[in-house]
Length: 326
Image 1 (cartoon, rainbow, N blue to C red):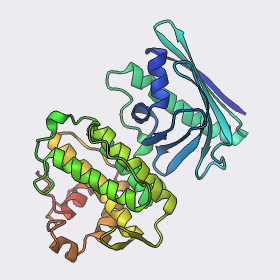
Image 2 (image 1 turned 120 degrees about the vertical axis):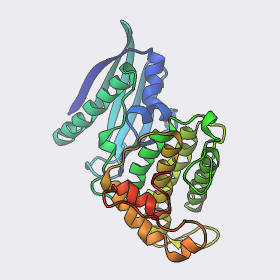
Image 3 (image 1 turned 135 degrees about the horizontal axis):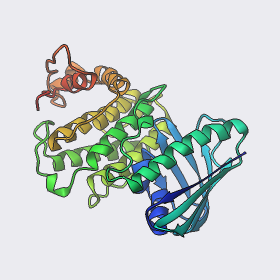
Image 4 (image 1 turned 45 degrees about the vertical axis):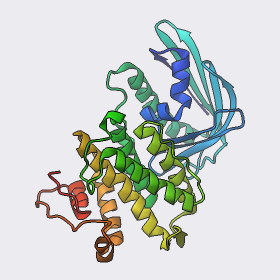
């Protein structure tokens, strides 16, 4: 079976090509995170929704005209990486570009499932190029089902990157609710944490300090979460200063992503939306990770009181020592 759909985009073929191949553009409409080695034979890995990772290799590349890549899933769909082929063809048309997407090598069941997915994301691509506000948050990325250490981290990263997208270098001096850190200092802290965990997992992520806040953190989080997902949560991780249970390290990563998303959002006055299933899960991880001994070390302040009407995210950040009114 084959999925075949053509849409119109009010952008140039070169811009359309960037939208379907460049990680920063892909994050606007299709992926939570993306690794792309854009050359024939190069590999890609996209976190399409939390806990669901598509991967394959590039077969043909004609910038501004055409890209062909194999497609499959690391788990689920009974479609292994490389088992099917996606061809995207771009042609100039009146007022923009005609984009045709063909997905071949699917069973009837796979074709039906992928048709639902491609229609969803092609609608988002159209919105990204046609609307003044872009595609906006993807509801499919909001509430993983089932949820675990890694799908929760993916969902938390999606929340964080949407906040960081609105931060500019001019904001770096603004205070945050996090232990007297400015935005710039908190970015450095978060980048250091992700790099430390990624290095411990063998990912060797690169900290692009000259990149935007979003691109910098995305560039560190993607390889770190990819390495962690493939490793799993069994055993211990040598963090250099100590051997920690992998579950504890995963809990720390989730806390860093979601709680600091709240910190950054508060610092710039941005509303933040988090599904309760995600904040509830990260709260359980926080309760397992933040012991009295950890608080005594100064890593976290004492838990703060919250109103009975407080939401799930408010309860999480209060447990980590934040004052909700900050």
